Length: 337
Image (spheres, helix red, strand yellow):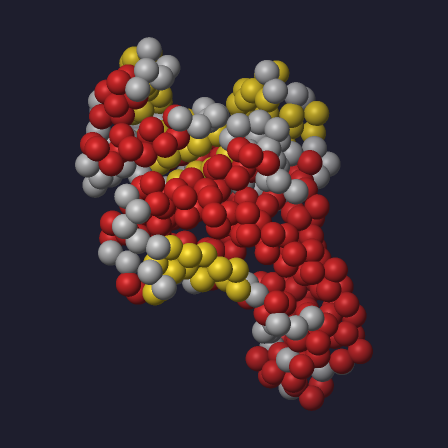
């Protein structure tokens, strides 16, 4: 009906991209040639109009109060937000890319320099890999040119490593506290940042892996290999957690992300919850909502296929809310308290 699209549009206004890591051309509605998203957001008691415009073969445009940004990094973080969806289970069950993205979504909203370093690192990494693939045989590789790419990776990689290490140190106790509340203190959980740079300098790692990289035609060492070690009672969550424990672990991670953003940002973050209450009993839904509402929260958007479930719980908590019915992409207000 368009509930998720609505939340993703809000995500786009805040982060200049879709939550689902889709290329912009795939965000365009089928049969259309462009998209335009416009929203009015409040920051420090001042209303701000944000517009995002995209058409294939034309550079994406982000405007704030009719002024076009030269760099997207200047916008990201002004309107901090978190989004929780059923697909977030990939953070635990799938590869390290999802876990790096979890860290990066938090850091880019707190530090524009981190975003610049991340973009620089990824660009040079792509160029280095293309350079390695341009040779038919490893013995043909020009190592002097390869060293130039190595040097360009060092500064952004070191900054990324340091910031990731620091943010996980801050996030870990908040995450453990949230999990304790959600689970009723039934299990012990842990979160550890894993990086090749914690053992050796990137410059040395690149030198040692040079021969391997030329044969594989890709860069095997660097912060693009970083990961998070997720444990429950000292065992990997992915292999040993039940469905209930996995959901609790994931929610605790996301709520910790929200809480840290709230602490470190000038404004309270937006919270976007997309169908996360599906298959949860009413008591568990109420506990989760109480966790959010007792904090100094920003605006919360919740989608649910149960028409009155959330409204009844929120009304009982004495919180102002509006309820909309979404049908065929159109949202109509049906209740306001």
